[in-house]
Length: 146
Image (tube, rainbow, N blue to C red; front, side, top):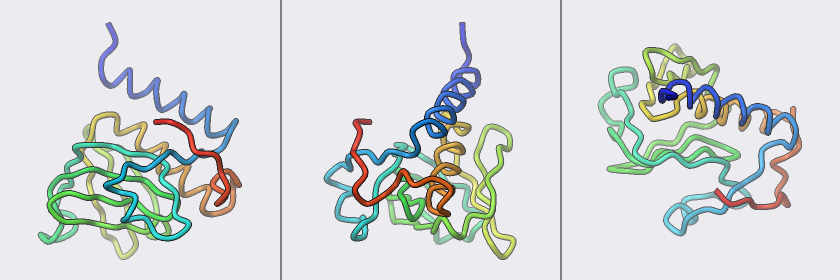
């Protein structure tokens, strides 16, 4: 029987291999997030029911909601919203079963979700595509099902 951690590790490795072979392929946005996307911004991953640890970034952040990884940012939509430009993410690390996004200025945001390794790979792929290491998020990219 596989544990959640083993399944996460397996899914993360499969996603990493897929991104290397095919690049990041945008997915179709749900109607609820479609209006939040800027012109030309593409949805790359969606994670429901994410919790943000507010101790690292001030009390104004919403504690939970749906997390979206786009071609430009990481977006949390819930009791409020949080938008972190991909350019502001300096690194991402796993810590005690959560994903910590290290931001400029010594700031960090902890993301509590199932499959944090997979989310780390998805964010890394989005950052690489944005930086031009992978042309797969072109505006004309084919949409894929979730």
